Length: 435
Image 1 (tube, one colour):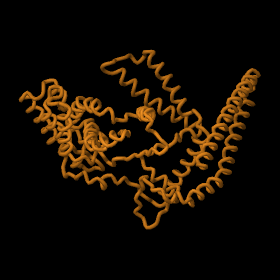
Image 2 (cartoon, one colour):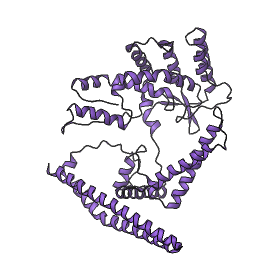
Image 3 (tube, one colour):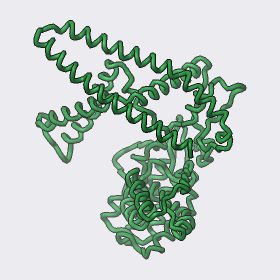
Image 4 (spheres, one colour):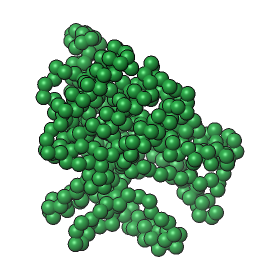
């Protein structure tokens, strides 16, 4: 209780100091604008530039001094934390990297940073880069985004002339937005964290280069979901897809427009199989998009009570939970993550669960297509998925392609069946569950 009160008072005083700093910053900006206006009227730009340079150097020096003075206190706090008896009772649930070396060349800070994994969202490192680097990055980002948008809008079906003033307006707005993102200053706390992360990352890179280390992703080894093929099976899969769609159309199980919408493009000769990151040109891509288009709205409607779309929807649900008087100081929050979900889905069981899901909600047909036909189409998407990776060709034997539109919907439906008992138990006790 006393510790919690101390933390609250500490946060209170820190917020007061943050507000004071913002007030001083605003006062400084106002005074500097007046000085800038005065010197500009006197045509004394050299003195103004010298003053700017001096102020910037002074600010950076003060920040470095503060950071250096904080380092001993940070070490003391960390040591006290490590000695704390309560810390020893905490069980870590963070992912940890696997080290295949005789000795660990990384210190604790570097190792903890590696443990965050590739999905960790780091602070905006561009905000602490020199201004020239920021300007270069802004220029490159602007050129890349603008050219893509311009090429899209000038092509079919929009065909907007390139000299249209809308492009100039878009270019100006895009540039202003990028400047706002890259140039907007971080809070002092975030600046310190960004610099610390940059230093740790730099030290990790130096160790990797000096010791000639390799940090691979162990995805293939962990999942056992892929088998290497000796030849490219694209033509075989392509013919199989065409034959299936043709047979379904001839039997009247799918309509003509559905047949045409799912038929792969025959004009692209020699299309290679796609890597796992993308299935944009795979033979089953159009079937996947079509099925996802008709099945996803069903899942979204039937499972909306347990679906968390984003952070805002989570806050909304927690607010409802709080208004019911269920949120207490003893309430426990639990999170879990399904590792490699897409690639660990059992294919046959996933198809069976899809059928059960549609049956349970009264569907015998979806958009005029029987659920048995839907199962056949979904089956060819899951079971005939091959891709190129590292100059080798693999077939996926478990789960679905991460770049396939239908995979997300199938995974959601599979998880809705898996979580059914948990949801029922939570509902009985008035608790909240969301995914």
